[in-house]
Length: 166
Image 1 (tube, rainbow, N blue to C red):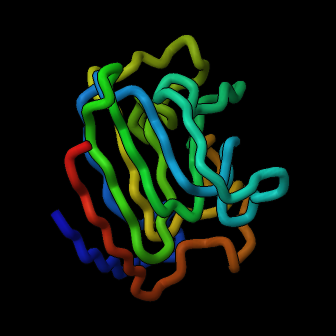
Image 2 (cartoon, rainbow, N blue to C red; image 1 turned 180 degrees about the vertical axis):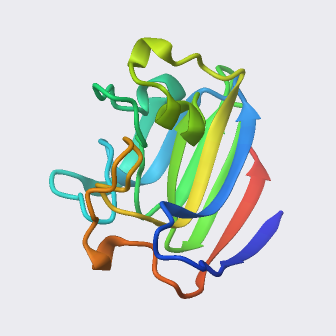
Image 3 (cartoon, one colour; image 1 turned 60 degrees about the vertical axis):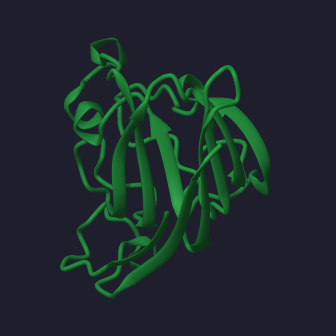
């Protein structure tokens, strides 16, 4: 399936502009070609390099003292989510795409005060963002005023996805 997606933000206070979906939790293996292997964002790429990396959904997030947006990877070109037998879904991208694959929704992360309060969802929450606000995105409860060049701009954002069975 090919998706040609355009997003038109109406506010520069958005934390992200993109698609989100629930994925079968048995597809826990994450193989990707993007910045990695650690979490990174548009304003936080020191120490990461473009490459092919592998992880599991359970290891994609960072354990912050106060749960917040986590696990982002920028400049995605290819993502494969698969089960233990190698079956799954493959997503190829064109344009600027960042992703995260976590067992929590953004609301789960924002509403928890401590990591022990988080209950994993019975599915994987997959975000495919055309733009993600940089660090200081207010996900921990207070906007620390992300620099303007790292905010989601009030202009059209666009990317293409090709989704296929693996």
